[in-house]
Every structure is written in structure tokens, then in C-alpha cells.
Length: 399
Image (cartoon, rainbow, N blue to C red):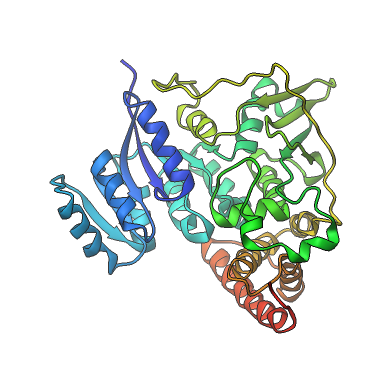
């Protein structure tokens, strides 16, 4: 009989976490939820605990521990569970001896320390948190190698590359090609982008995601982050990582080998597929509730190069990667602050790259030697970003 994989899900109440739990439902004989870590959505977290009966749960704030306990009582939950809060609670969840596999699905820099702790404990990590690799990719992958902990990407593009790369050796790879839909503003005239509103930016043509990543997809910063992620995940130099716009979002990425062969991974655009792959690897498990199959009959696939003059965030990401050291960490922090300011209608859509560029110019480049260095760097960049937002907000008229 096949063994059961026991999971810790960091960010269980977010979009990735909820998709991960959907995969668990479809593979009840192979997957069990051992620990869940959520944010402030206590109602959803309590419901997840009621359904999956984990032994450990973590909330963002200490004062929410008793609130969560009360919600569990209201639901008549009688299971035995340990409750914790904050970063310490996340680390506790990720390093539980009973956990076989950690899903790093929390957004932002929040899950950084717990993801590192999972590697130190020798746990395999299914990585959906972009910020871990963008802010600390070199450190993270070095830690994984040192502790012989496997890292499997959950992002659809990197999951696709992971699958394609199984067709050959690293020495045989000429380049990898990340694809992206181009977001909602692929055909919008550049002079109209300053009038983009948050609801417009959140209306992604293909994917349903959290607010920040949806805006990042609209600016193409998401694709810039993916270039940085691919650099560290697969050990490739930046010049061998390319991007193409693919509006249909059926080809999730491609690998070109030295003999000219190109291997592409195609699938319906549904995050449950890459999550299922990551949780199953190195197997391919067949779920009890299979997803719709891809039908290519009558389909047309289009590809084009991204326009960095229309979407300067992509160029800023490459600039940060080439600078190395702390610059990708500065990039990530600046983007998070700028996107939040746009969503709160303090900045224009076109101000997002302006904030990021100001931060990259203001922050001091240096090498990162530890998680503490990453957190300090993140704090510094956020301070500069807030200053840039304040300066731009005074001169911007936001609709």
C-alpha cells in the first residue's frame, strides 16, 4: 500500500492554500493535512481545521489564538489541536516531526523564515511563495543543497520547466522560455495605462489569484520575478532565461535543448495541476476527482515578445537580477509597497515602476549572508518605498 504524505501548508487560507486543499480532497488515500498556517481569515481557517483535523494550526496574531479556539468550539470541534501564532508558530508547524512535506504558499516575505526552517529540518518544500526565491534565492537553494532537502516549484511556469527538464541533462539545455498571458493590458495603448483602476488590474483574463500577484501579472513584474526564480531554481545564467507572451495560457513554459529540440508543457490553466505534480513528485498520482482534460482540437497558439517599454517592470527585474546581491530583495519589497499603494488608490498604475526604480537607486547594493540580512534589507527597501509613495502621491491625481 502506498504511503501517506503528511503536509504542512503555509498560507492555507490564501488562493494557493485553498487549491492545495482541493488537491488533498482529490487524493485522500495519499495526502493528509498535518498543519495549517493562515492569516486573519479565522472563519475559513476554523472550517479548514474542522474538515481536515490537523494536529497543529497557526494564525498571524497572538490575540487571534483564542478567537480561533472560540470559533472551533462554536462549530462543535472536539479534535486535539495545538494552536500557535506568528513567525514562531509558522516555524513550529514547518518543523513538526510528523510533517513529511511543507507547502510554502504564504504571500510576501511572511513565510521566509518558516521555509528556511523547513529546509534545515530536511523537509522537502513545494514552493509557491515567489518572494522566497526573489528575495533570498541564492541563500535558499544553498540551504536546500546543504540539508539535501528537495525543492519542487508550484508556480505553473516553473513546474512546467521542472517537467520539461526531465527530458535531458542540465548540460544539454540551451535556454528556457517562460510564458505569460500578458495580463489584461496587453493591447491597451500605453498612454491609457495611467488611467487603469484597481478593478481593471484585478480582472485577469485567465487566472484567479490573490490581489498582489494579479496586479504583478498586469505590470509583468510577475514575469520578472519568475526570471529571478528560474535563475536560482535551475542554476541558469540570466541570459539563458527568456520570456514570451502567450495569451492562451496553455503552454506553461518550454525548454530548448542544444540539438534544437524544444520540449513544452501544456495543460489547462488551473493551479491544482502544478500543486498536484509537486505533491506527487517523483510520481504522478491519479486523483479520484480528475480535472478537465486539455482539448487541443480547434485551438490556435500565439506567441510574441514582451514590450518592455509598455511594461518597464520586466526590465527592472532583469536589472536587479544582473546587479545581484540585495537588489532582488529591494525589488520585491518596493513592488509590494507600490502595489499596495495602487490598490488603495494612492498611486496610479504607471507609478508602480516609478516607485521600484526610485528604491533600486536609493538602496545600497550588498551581499546577503543570512536570513537576518534578508529581513533587514527588506525593511530598508520598504522604508525607501514608502518615502517614494508619499512623494509620488502628492503629485499624482488618482481616479
